[in-house]
Length: 280
Image (cartoon, rainbow, N blue to C red; front, side, top):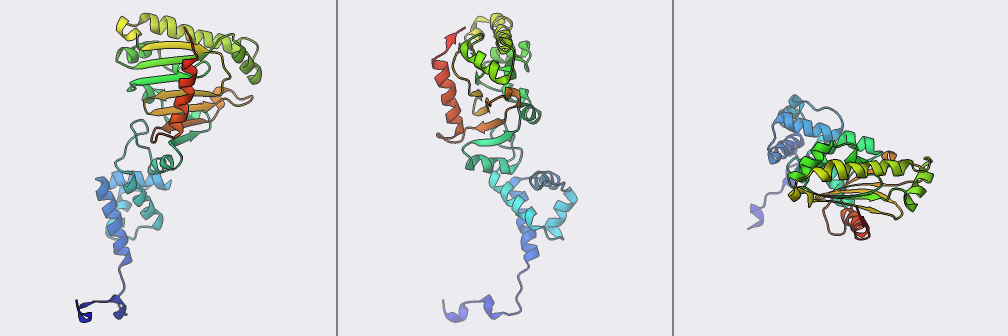
């Protein structure tokens, strides 16, 4: 190509790119990439931005108004995330969750307490469609006290495999934990023994022969450091802190994304305790 055929914008001092139109086009392309209506796109943008976005505003940003910079950044993050999904099926309630999870070794949610976690993600969302559940901790209240006995039996009858590992009632290490939390002697042991009875007599004993093989219960007598629920590719983990009840401990929501992430760490925690269990 000859020099005369090369067109350079530098030679046109009067040329001014229409940056507003470029921004509008970028936003329209982001919405199209997600296959969303203006109202659906506005709702996702609002989640990202932390303030409500109306469908009218989202449409105006594509046609007449210039979208703000933070809106363009949010739209770009939404495109990178891919199709919208829920926390339990592999996506996130907002696009930042997946980005944070990818960077921080499987972590997709942090809650100040178990109550805050359960308000955000009801227990039914965790267990209703699970195929494999493994749990270890102290009394396993998340399982035994928040799901009805009949529903637990239904879940197992429908095909879910459930392995439960309780801290041994009236053992050495549960006594240490009672002292650390300031409970009278035997208080946590009684609670754990009750939950064990629920699982044995009200769940296991009422299962069909085929389903009963999918429920295994054990106890262990070791220092307790974490309450761990492994639910298919999800993990809910809580540390046991000095003088803090388990229900008040920070709660981590983890999704398996890589072989060496946090999910693998807590998988190993459960597996190690399960290998040393005492059958019940």
